[in-house]
Amino acid sequence: MTEMPTLTPDICVIGAGSGGLTVAAGAAQLGASVVLVEEGEMGGDCLNSGCVPSKALLAAAHQAATVSQAKKFGVSFRAPTINRANVAKHIAGVIAGIAPHDSVERFEGLGVTVIRGRGVFAAPDAVIANGQRIQAKRFVIATGSKPVLPPIAGLDGIRPFTNETIFGVTEPIEHLLVIGGGPIGVEMAQAQRRLGAKVTLVEMARLLPKDDPELVGFVRTALAADGVDLKEGTNIIRLERNDDGIAAHLANNEGTTEEIAVSHVLVAVGRRPNTDGIGLERAAVTLKGSTIQVDQRLRTSNPRIYAIGDCAGGPAFTHVAGYHGGIVLRNILFRLRAKVNPDLIPWVTFTEPELAYVGLLETAARARFKDVRTETLDFDTNDRARTERRDAGRIKIVLRAGGQILGVGIVGPQAGELLAPWCLAIARGLKLSAMAGLLLPYPTLSEISKRVAGNYYAPRLFSVGVRALVRGLMKLP
Ligand SMILES: Cc1cc2nc3c(=O)[nH]c(=O)nc-3n(C[C@H](O)[C@H](O)[C@H](O)COP(=O)(O)OP(=O)(O)OC[C@H]3O[C@@H](n4cnc5c(N)ncnc54)[C@H](O)[C@@H]3O)c2cc1C
Ligand SMILES: NC(=O)c1ccc[n+]([C@@H]2O[C@H](COP(=O)([O-])OP(=O)(O)OC[C@H]3O[C@@H](n4cnc5c(N)ncnc54)[C@H](O)[C@@H]3O)[C@@H](O)[C@H]2O)c1
Image 1 (cartoon, rainbow, N blue to C red):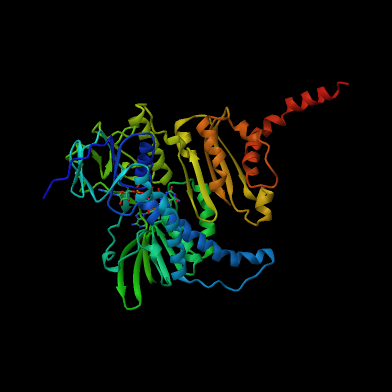
Image 2: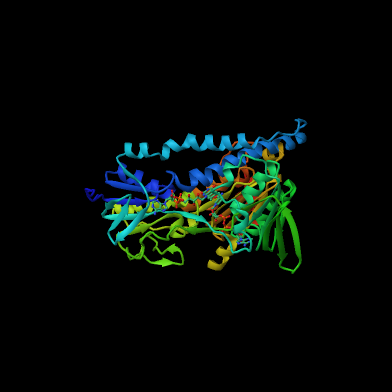
């Protein structure tokens, strides 16, 4: 057999998900030679088993929910009929619509050499994939993550859903037990409940433990109103398959035990980076646990090799993988010393109401600065939210005494969209007064941002001193 000649590109990217595709597309368009290695579906988790299918499923679920919400507007429909097979078709159709953007054809069109196969390091400067040796100047590891399966007795025997299987379901789900109340757990619990399943969510700590508890309260209320049975501070002792389905034995933090009968189980207890069996030891790349250790410039312990996205342990979001990709491009191609700034990262949980955040949570801000202030305003003060009867929610800004914005959390209608100007303000170092001074159209949800900023300055604007000044000025002819 003739040996394939070694490829010697400028950059070899392992993994064609959100992070890897950003690097490959950017580098190729900027004139570097790129080899991209992918062992599974192009587009990675986000397109195939993450953001895209989950948001498509939620969109179907919210359609079903509008039927019951319509009564508030004097409009009524008959109860929705949920056709699971058609919901799965809708999800597959959305993925298929986006897939060309991430396809082999598009990347080859950009000049990237795409190799389908598992990339494994053979040496500190070489990867082998599908029998092909790639000796690149720089490597970028973007291998993503996979769902963790917790050590719960009996879990193996019941073949639980994970994010890799739940979106293809074509049969009705009678009673879903969701294990884990992080973003996947809460989004899926609401979606499945609105699509007609009975849902019990078991979370060992509290719901959405990485988010601001004050704002999470609104999500908790909404899930309960949907009919999701929330069991926080609760563990699953064991699971058993029996003639009726699955028996789940639970115990809460007070020691109370109970048994519930469910038909299906979804595991959503976190992610494990894909770093096993890819030869990192041969590449002299150091791990911390299962996460690739990187510095602020995303360099691993091997100066030729960078790691980005979920496998580098940053917050597991598509936009973070993309942000990492941009930083690596600047470091490799332009020899800039670009670094990750964790204080700029936004995140959104796409329940109804949405829960969105950018910057520092109040607790993190207070740990770092002494002069932290907060200002909050509820959506029931916003006329547009009132007209749409979507007025449950709150905006909370975390700032320093001088008006430097440190973080903003919004729970409410379209919170993810409302976050954009705050992302800009924090990234550009704008003061809160910039938001307070905006001229915005009425009636819009965005006005809540201007109002909360205005409220912060109100005590100073309407102070005794300013009132005395106005009285004085009014005496002038
Ligand atoms: C259900 C769910 C919903 C989500 N929703 C959101 C959301 O709404 N918004 C958001 O920002 N984030 C969301 N995320 C997170 C987001 O999907 C991930 O953070 C993102 O996909 C990470 O990108 P990545 O490039 O690091 O990895 P991935 O996108 O997972 O890509 C890694 C790729 O590497 C390939 N690979 C792995 N090992 C090898 C190897 N040795 N050789 C070759 N190829 C390899 C894999 O096959 C995969 O294609 C969600 C995740 C899940 C599971
Ligand atoms: N909208 C979004 O951006 C979005 C949506 C989904 C997922 N994601 C990303 O994917 C990541 C993974 O999501 P996730 O929800 O699986 O993980 P997660 O780590 O964010 O949350 C897992 C939850 O499970 C709980 N848990 C762990 N073991 C448990 C057990 N044995 N029993 C009960 N509860 C248990 C944890 O306390 C935690 O609250 C997220 O952190 C997020 O970065 C993002």
